Length: 284
Image 1 (cartoon, rainbow, N blue to C red):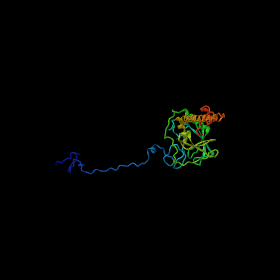
Image 2: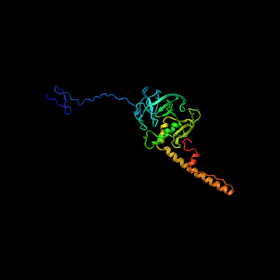
Image 3: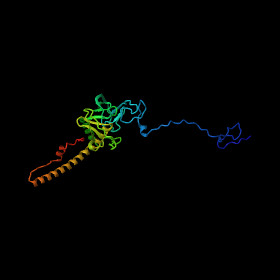
Image 4: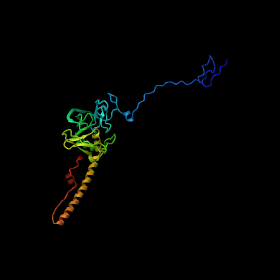
């Protein structure tokens, strides 16, 4: 008995002991495949680290997990003072090779930013600052800040800059005046360098308080030539003021000559005028 064979698969189209049956007409069998669990998150979260205690995503530049508040091992960059997680070899903002920092323990000063934790004395490179471990705000005395800004200005146009531009104060932001952690007098709010857009709190006697990330933003502003441009602008303003005062002096002298009196009002160089106006202090 001859058995007809399927041209597609070679199987027997009828009963046969020599050939397997044709399988072409059979319905395909669905094979269950394991599905991967759905993971939701942003692109930035994909690159972010997770808290070793609770697993929450960690923001950059923090000392504590924002979810469970556990303290994290981190270190400040000696050049731009940005925070990095322990074990990082180079600073992500300025490229400097990271070293060690020394936490000398809490002080008696309270953080003016969060009005909570005591400020800790931190040695970063050759500089000493006071930092809040809760909000990472820092208080820097005037001599230290002067050294930091001079060092940053010397690197203008050389330092690698990274991250977003510093945020400026919005007109809708609530203005809060804070107490100096040293003398507890109210500090003044000033635009650093008069044009940076970074609003800091200053005690003219003891130092400047920077919210989290503000010190880094200020040093980047200085390294980008911001202070040099500010001084040039102030010099032009001083020259304009000098011209105005000289004109006023000439008018007064003319009036005095007409009235028969001898009144001399004179102003010298722009340098003398700048000295009379208090120099180039950025907070003046």
